[in-house]
Length: 519
Image 1 (cartoon, rainbow, N blue to C red):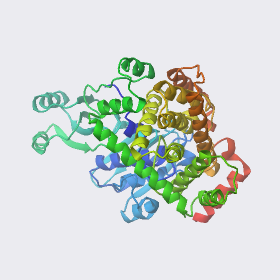
Image 2: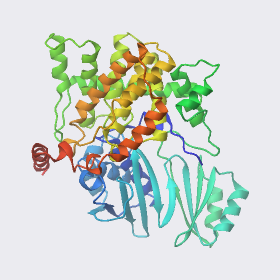
Image 3: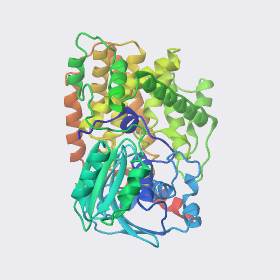
Image 4: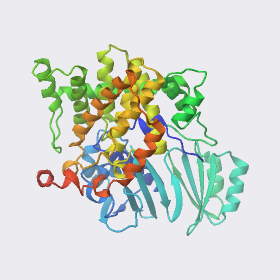
C-alpha cells in the first residue's frame, strides 16, 4: 500500500502542547497505541532508549516522557493536563522504568517498550518519524507497520489461514496482513472496526487466543487503493496543464483525494487551523509564564518597543519577528500550537503568513488558501525527505517551514503558481546545512532565532520570486538534495544534545540550573 502524506496528518498539525512534535506528539500517539494494545489496563512499563539515538539525552527535556505517559493515560496531544503528567501517572498506579541501553536501534527516535498488567505482557517497538508522525514496527515479536491511520484489529491465532478465509467471507477490509511470530497475528487494516457480532464469532473459536483493537491516532485515515493526483512537483505541473489552477487549489484537490473528503471539508479544516494560529499569537503577545523554560516572554517587550518606534523600521518583517516569537513562547509555556511542520519550527509559518496577511488586510479565507499552498510544498518534502531534525538537522524543520512559508507569501501576494514554487525552491536552497543543537536540550534557543531567520528568509525569497529571479534548481531536485545533505550531517549535530551550542559551557550551566530548579 503506497504511503502518501496528508497535509493535516504530516504537514500542518498536530494541534498540540509541548516543546517538540517528534518527541511529544509522536510519543503521545505511541502511548495511545500501547494503551489500546493493553485494553486500557497497564501496571508496569519498561522503556529502552539506545545510547546512540536522540532520545537517550532528550527524552525528559524535550517532552518524550510527557508525551508517552500522556498517551498511556489516554490523553490527547493538546490536553491541558500534560504538564502534570508525572503526578497523573503515579495516581494511575503505573510503574515506569526507563533504561538507556543498546537496543540495536536503526532510527534515532526509537522506543522499545514492554507493557505489563496482571493478565499479560506485550512488547512494542516504535519510531517517531518527524512532525508528530510515528510508525509501530514491532508488536510481540512480529514485524508490523502501523502508522495510526487505520483502525487496526490484531487477531492472535494458531490457525491464521482459516482466520483469513473467515475475514474474506465476512467483511471487506482495506488490507489483511499475516505476521508470523511466537504466535501468528492476523492484522486487519480498515476504516472502522469489525462489528461486535463478527468479533464475538471469532472469539468463540478455540484456535483464537485473543483480539486487540487499536484505534487510529491521526485525523486523516488511509484506505485500500489510495490514489492521489500527483506526488511530485513535476507531476503536479503536468496534472495542471490546461487547468491553470493556483497552488492552493491544487493542494485542496490533493488533500481531498488523499483523505476521501470534500474540498469544502478540507478548506474548513484549514480555516480552523488559521484560528488556532491566530489564538497562539494573541496569547503570546499578552505574555506567557512557565517556570521550566529558558527564555521568557520577549515578544511583549518587542511589541512595546515597536509601538514606541524604538526599533529600526523593518516594516512587516518586524511584525513577523514579533509573531514568530509569540508562537514559540506559547509552545514553551505549554500552550496550544500547531506543529507546522513541527513544533520546533512552529513559529515560522504562522508568524510569516499571518503577519503578511494582516499587512495586506486579507481575510481568514485568503490566509487559509496560503496555508494550503504551504501544505502542498510540505507534502512534497514529507514524501521525499523528512521533517525530523534527528534525521536531517534543523534544515528539515525550520528549513522546510521557510520553503513552505515562502510559497504561502507568494500566494497572499497573488503571485503565480510558478512563482510560489520558485520561492519555495530558493528558500530551501538557502537552508541547507542547518544543524540542530538546542541549548540545554530545550527547544527554545537557537530555535527562536532560526524560526525568525526562516520567516524572514521566506519573505525575501517570496519577493525574489515575485520579481522573477531565477531559482535555477527545480523544487523536486532541491528536496532530494536537502534529504541527502541532511543525512550527511554528523549525528552529534542532529538533535542529540551531543554537539554544537548544546555542549558549550553556558549551555551545560543552563541545563544544570534547570535541573536544580525542578528538584
